[in-house]
Structures are given as structure tokens and as C-alpha cells.
Image 1: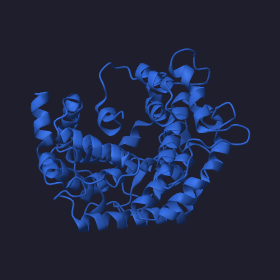
Image 2: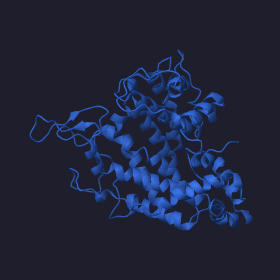
Image 3: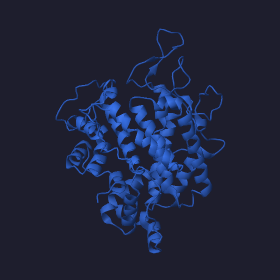
Image 4: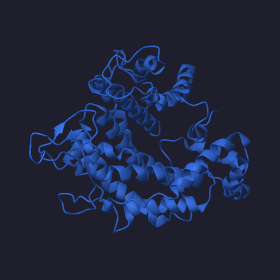
Length: 401
């Protein structure tokens, strides 16, 4: 079955390679375009070392063929604007006040997620982004047009079609009933769109994704980027001192690159050095994240944001990986602070009300292994992965040189 899947996946690519039409690499910003192109070439050449990874991708992509469509119009709630095209979510850690008849204003219970959050737009947004990403990867690596067609349909439903599209703003993100209709913290809901931007880049050249689709998608992100930069909610999130500020910068840089605003992307990435100075202590601790009730999860999540931002910085000539303040604050120190706890050599000493999961640090470890060339990160990644089987994403998206 694996061998046959590989033959199917490489069929389209074999034709392109034979005609000498293989591109230098797709227009992506977080993944390495050259590495993706090399993986594509190897699959087209029938490289059996990638057969298991291709099969894993195919399984996930086949599931995604049945996903959606997803739309902001599907929620039962109506935003304060009266327009269901407006994205809406509620704060994850806000709950009805049991002492009030209507539960309002809601009260905060940090780290305890209110299940009602799933009734709004954040869950469908995440599912759409995940499905589009895997479908685009399957198409790019030679899986055939049905994968691109499904990805294009999901993208049009969420972003482009007049009847189902999301308006390009987050005025009603992470609302707190009885307190506010929307707040800056809601912007973290759209971090998955960083992956969507790269998925669109992978779809270039497919029959399913047209030039008109591309232009409309770029227009949507240009409008959303303007809202992030100019709205009060966006400006407030830009000033966030914790992981929200990190992921805000990552989003702005990603979307700026997507719409061709390279100077803006470079300016934001360059300015992020000041965030390193304010967020990371000389010994690597992240105090804003350690103050949370899920301090391990948030420390790892913020580091994932930083490594995403550092990768995007590479695209515009800004080196955040090796930046170091005068007193030693840097990204590598932040990772090294977390490393002994991920490896189980020390017990996490900070508050963590949910199960400690070392694998939260897996993606930063893999990125660090590739970027710093230190085997200790690769060894730790293998240890915390929890599986002896290789991850198809690691094998196809970040192959070893």
C-alpha cells in the first residue's frame, strides 16, 4: 500500500520534472522553500526513503478531503454588529459568575477553559486552517488536483465567497460577556492563518487556485493587516508584554510578506529585539508566562511564537536567533532554561494545573536542532516526541541535509 501510494503521489510531479518545469521553490515564508522543492524532487524520483512519510501525508490529506466547508455564518450567535460575517469568539478562561442571575459580568479562571468557547468561530477557524494546510501540502508533493480543489473550496468559503466570507477584522474576538464585546487578546485566535498563508503559496500552479483567487486572497490579508496595524484593538495587542505580543508580531510579519510589504515585515522583525529584552530574563526564564496557571504550556507556546518569528525574520535579513542583549537575554537561553524539564532531568517547579507534557517543546527543539546545529536539541526532540516512528511533517517539510 505504501509503495502504491508513493506511485500515485509522484505521478503529477514526474511529468513536471520530465518537462524541466520544476520551480526553484514555492512562495512560502515559515517553511524553507528550497527544502520543500528538494523533497518534491525526491518524491518525483521515487525515493523510497520518503515512502512512509508520503503515506502518512496521504492518510491525513484524505481525511481533510471530507472536512468542511467552514464559515463564520455557521455560528448560532450574532455579533453585536448584527453581521454574522464578523468573526466572534469568547475568552477561553472566562466563566459565568454563579452569584449573578445572568452570570454577568463573567469572571476569570485562568487556565480553565470554558467549553462554550467551541460554539463560536475559533474552532471552525482552526479546523479550516489545519485542513487547508495538509491539503496544500498533499497537492504540492504530487497528490493530484482533488487535494488542491478541496483546499481552494475551503479557502473560498472562509475568505472570499460573498455569502460565507469572514470580514477582515477581529472586533469581536475573545469577548467577555458583561465586560467587553471584543478585546486585543482575541488576535491570538488567528495565529493559524500564518500556516494558511504558506498553504496558499503551495497551491500556486494548481488549476483549482486561480489568479483571481490569489488576488482576492491578498486583498483580504491586506485589509486584515491594515486592521491589525491601525485599529485600537490591534494597537493594544501590539503592546502586549507576553506571548500575545510575540504572536502579534509573527502574524504581522507573515501577512506583510504575503502582500508584498517587505519593508514593513523587516521593520517589525527588527523591532522584536526589544521584546526579547523585556520578555526573557538573562537566565532564560519568561516571567510573564511563568505567572500563568499553565506556566509550562505558556512558556513553550511563547517560544514557538518566537521561533516562528525568528524564521520569518530570516526572510528579511533580521537575525533574531542569535540576538543577545548586553546582559545575555536571548532565545537560546529561553530554550535552554526549559530543556532539563522537557528531558525529565528536573521537575517543573512552577504552577501547571494541567498535565505536564514535554512534547509541548517538540517544535522549538526541532527548529533549534536545525538552526543551531547542536545535537542536544535533536536528541531531546527524539526523546520528547513519544514515538519511535518518524513524523511525516518532519520528514517532508524539514528534511535532513
